Each structure stands twice: as structure tokens, then as C-alpha cells.
Length: 334
Ligand code: ACO
Image 1 (cartoon, rainbow, N blue to C red):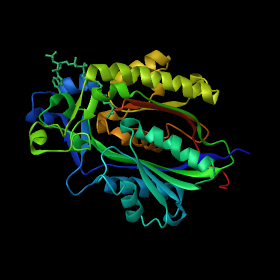
Image 2: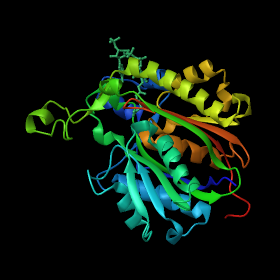
Image 3: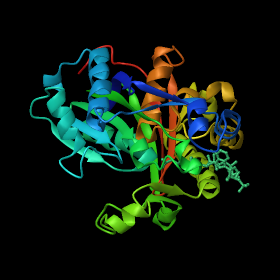
Image 4: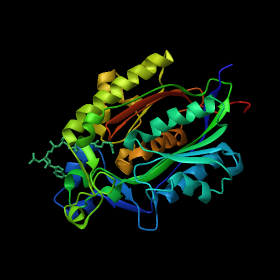
């Protein structure tokens, strides 16, 4: 019998502070009207200095464990998908293991920018399906505003901070990940990046003065690649699962820009009613975006046990990924 990795718990966490478009409009030349009409974003959460990535990740993880009814001692693997870790090392996943008092679990970070959670679901489910893990905590967490130049209106209005988590548990029942497709195109690495602070360009006072520690991006090009990457990987994941889009109850896309989501829906031939959108309140939370949206969709009853759900994401790298999952916990956990 094949083994599956059911999603048995989920949860989310955001920083205390809300920053509205009106507040940004007081700091730079932009407006609520421009941001809402070009992106759909009305507000975002922004982490304070005492809210590192590990803290948000652990808070989301704690909710997911409680939802699953799983004790920290049962968790054998912790994966944190992030491109804004607490430090270059140790892994933020190790800090989460400590904060949640999970004994002995393997813990590592995974970097695939905004596609990180979908990549993590693919890797995490494989570990569970192969028998190497029985109970795995997968978290997508980013404090992307750490990489933001607040003087740059092209990027600063788009992003927010947060974390979302799921618990994966081994089962013989056909639940959780049914098929996934992930991809990358390194030639597009300069379309969106943070240049300074790594081994390629160690941060120097000169580079910091030039603002090279901040994210830059070619918004229009990213937009086009995002639509293509999400559509093509969605079609591949659906084909691998042997499922048609009509059978999908809800699509949970990466929450970067409502116009990107509308373009993906149009190209796939999907009505927007079957697309989950919550970026109006969160902005683009990078690797946290899909698990935050998935958790909210479950909380709101937009997905119920037995439903087929399509997750699709796109991010820096360039990276993309899609996953077909069957929602629900096993009737008998095994
Ligand atoms: N307020 C007011 N005006 C602005 C702002 C702002 N915040 N930002 C840009 N503008 C101006 C521009 O300067 C430009 O002015 P110009 O015509 O005088 O040069 C004008 O608005 C229009 O700019 P466009 O680039 O044409 O705007 P567009 O409709 O393409 O929207 C946006 C820009 C929102 C960035 C869009 O291209 C987009 O969403 N791209 C995808 C970005 C993305 O999702 N990145 C994240 C990827 S996921 C990850 O890895 C984290």
C-alpha cells in the first residue's frame, strides 16, 4: 500500500503591527488608490525588532500542532521555508525546534523564495511517504520587510511579514499531496534579488550605502513569468495527479498581486470564485503566503475534508511550484 502524508493541522501567525496604504502614502509618493488598483493590497503586517522569523514561525507551528492534536514530542522533522532566516546559520528550523520544545527532531531550512512552501510540501511529503518521517512540521515564514528599502515605492508597497504552518502525518489513506511539480530558471536570477550580504558580494560600507542589501525587481517581467510559471506547473501537477481543474474545489495561489491571480485564473479557465484571495490584508508574505492562505481557507470553511485543492506559487530564483492535495485528516492515524 502506498503511504501518504495527510495535512492534519494548520495555523498562521502575523506580527503585531499593521501598516495601511494610507500610512505608506504619508512616507513616500504613492497612494491607497494606486496600490489597491495595481495590486489589490490594502494593508500588511510588519515585524518589529523583537519579532524575528523564528518567533513567527514557532507561533504558526504551535497553532498547527494544536489543530492536529499532536504533541511536540511526536514531531520528528521540522522544515522552515524562508529566505529571511534569523541568521545565516544555525537554521531557523533549529530555533523553532527549541522554541516549541520538540525533542530530537531533524531540522533544516529550505530556500526557494515565495515558492518555498510548495517546495517544502513536496520535500516534506516525500520524507513522510518514504517512511523517513512520520510526523513533520512544515512552516513557511518570512520577514520580507527586512529586505525592503522603505524609500523604494516600486517594492515597499508589495510585501508583508508572517508565517503559516502545516503538520504532515503518515497515513495509508489517499490524503495530502497527490502530485507536485516544481521548477527553476536561474537565468532569471537578476530579475529579482538581494545582491549584497552573501558570499558573492559580502556587505561592505560602500555597498550598504548604495542600498545593495535591499530587494530590487523588474516588476513587469516578473509578472509575465509568474503567470506562465504558475499556469504551466499547475497543468503538470494536475496531469500527474490524473485530475482535471473542474474537480478542484479551490485554488490557493501565492498572494503577490490580485492581477497575477486573475491572469492565472483566466489562462487556466478558472472562475475567480474558486480562487482564494487574502492579499488585501497581508500583502505578499513570500514563503508564508500559501500556508497563510491555506489556513484561512480552512478556517473559513472554503475547503472541507475530501476536497481537492491546487496550490501554486512563484518567486525569486526564478522558482515556481504547484501541488495537488486532498484535504482532510485520516479517520485512523497510522
Ligand atoms: N505608487 C505610485 N506609483 C508607482 C508605485 C507606487 N507604489 N510604484 C510604481 N509606480 C509607478 C511607476 O514608477 C510607473 O510610473 P511611470 O509610468 O511614470 O514610469 C507607473 O507607476 C506604472 O508602473 P508599472 O511598472 O507599469 O506598474 P504595473 O502595473 O506593472 O504594476 C507591479 C507594478 C505592481 C510591481 C506589478 O508589475 C507586479 O505586481 N509585478 C510582480 C511583482 C511580484 O509579484 N514580485 C514578487 C515575486 S514573488 C517573490 O519571490 C517574493
